[in-house]
Image 1 (tube, rainbow, N blue to C red):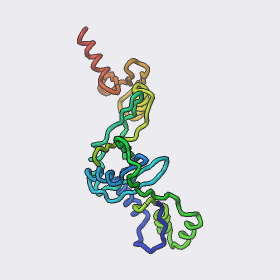
Image 2: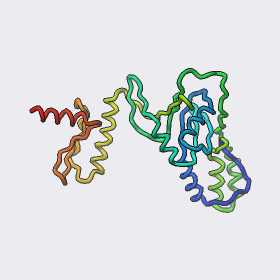
Image 3: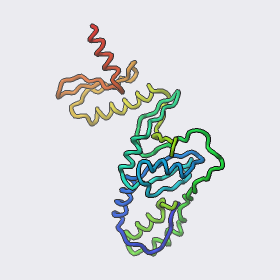
Length: 237
């Protein structure tokens, strides 16, 4: 829900508001929820990881919940218990963020109470213009604009969370994509790393490069299978 108020509040600089919101963001997660969700079970599940200060639900191409904990340690605990999804015939890019998906096992009762979803409609241009003309400084205008457009705080057992990730057609395609990016990073940012080659069509895709300071020739793979097979082959010969 977008808040719009002209009530006098304690004056803060825009920089102070930014810092406050940044600190709040570090204690918050965004969770994609099933269409019908039991709010009490949802909060009971999250409370296992720490005190929930604020939360609200909204619709944007699906149901989402913004959850603010009282401590950043709760975010670490929540992420520790969250899984990388595994889907048949697909592969996931293993990326961890604070955008999660709630998995609700079994069927959901159509009679269970639904959470209140907040309206995300912003104030009109006319309302914003009127608000800004009443302020005496740019700091006050920025603060008022932030308060008018921000998402407000007004606005269990058997559950599990998964990281929201990009999916690929196969594990091999995902591996090739990841190694391509890693190869560019090694080439651009790796001190002493030269002659970077992305050998992605090999049976075991790899990035090959030389480390000049040590004189080593390096092969980088998504796991250590290639190295293990190579060592086994060298040992056998």
